Amino acid sequence: MTELARRLGRFDAALLLVGSVIGSGIFVVPSLIARRIPEPGLVIAIWVFCGLLVLCGALTLAELGAALPQAGGIYVYIREAYGPFWAFLYGWTTSLVVIPGAVAALTTAFFLYLGHFLPLGLAAQKLLGIGLLALVALINCRGVRWGATTQNLFTFAKVAGLAALVVLAVVTQRGDAVRFLPLAPDSWRPGLVGAVGAAMISVLFAYDGWHFVGFVAGEVRDPERNVPSGIFLGVLIVVAVYVTANLAYYYVLGQAAIAQSERVAATAMSALLGPSGASLISLAILCSTFGAICANVLAVPRVFYAMARDRVFFPALAWVHPVWRTPTRAIWLLAGSSALLTLTGGYEHLITMAMFAAWILFAMAVASVIVLRRKHPEWDRPYRAAGYPFTPVVFTLVAVAFVVVTLVESPRSSLFGLGIAAAGLPFYAWWRKKDGA
Image 1: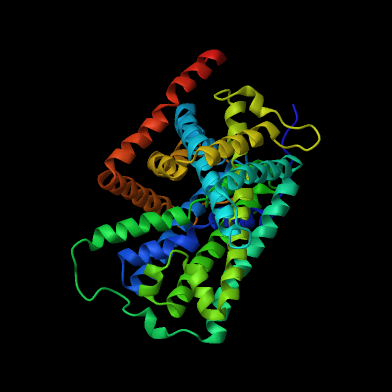
Image 2: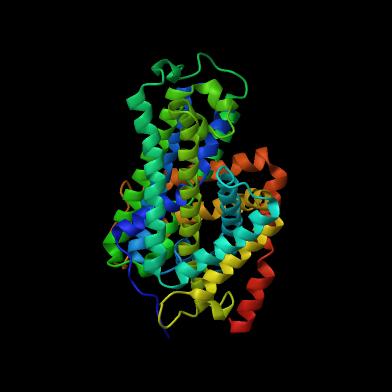
């Protein structure tokens, strides 16, 4: 049987993480948060705190990625710690619901911003969206090196665009440091905890994708070293980009203007360079969304591949192209399901519902490092999670709190999210029975 080829290095892993995380969130989420929290210092603190939280989770998964350098990432870790049932629920919920919905949302956002340069009707956007997904799928089918190179180029472009915004804010000095004030609330006010909790949910959505490196661990050279270092480097880049971009927004615009803006990055660049600034940042957003689509199509099909190899999904998806050494059928499945959601719409509500169940499984995945240290002390662990057990415990506790807050604030969506996960149970039972398990 043809196996996946190890053709990715440390910087490929880091740029995959950066490319998968930085999509459209940094261009949208700041205005949503500014409407809830008027203190710039508190907003920046939330971005830093969530970045450190993600770093705790990433450092933990880095240990698992080095010990289990197989395609599938979190799916593999949950399978080894808790068994195939929970691993299937993760694969079903995340790869079959959350990720196709996210890719559909990114595709829609791409053509929304393309409208700045080339106005398109809704029907044209949807048809071109299908064509775009087909192109990305074809690139990734031709080889993991092809997919990684394309993703890397657009990741460089998106980071360069955000870096240009920060540099221009400093060089032109068309801002005011007083806009960073107040740093914190002067006094307690009703609803502050709820506002901070809602803001954290939005920021954590913007950080989503930090676990993608594990999906392609089976194609990383020297994974015992390159997976942990790639994860660590990638998370540091993302946190630095997010925090400095928010500082630039507040320096140039101030809290009130950010809260009123639907496209905060374009508003900030317009303030710095005039109309040409909006065009430049729109180009950066196009690179950002396209790069995030590439990162998803590169990484996520490896979960389908891992599930199929475990015979809890269509066995045909375990097939690897004998020349290109990629799971081509799995790639086309993700592209096809994303295209379907692009056509039909309704993916935003689907993502919101499914993310509740996904975060339960995220907490289990990070906690699995504790389970597996006890379950398999004999395993070779080339990298051990920095700050253990503090890092996995902190992430798990915050993830549990995130789930509880979501359940309290949005009980209907949360229960629907559990329903989406439960909908996979008949399929799991059928595949297990078919396999004779």
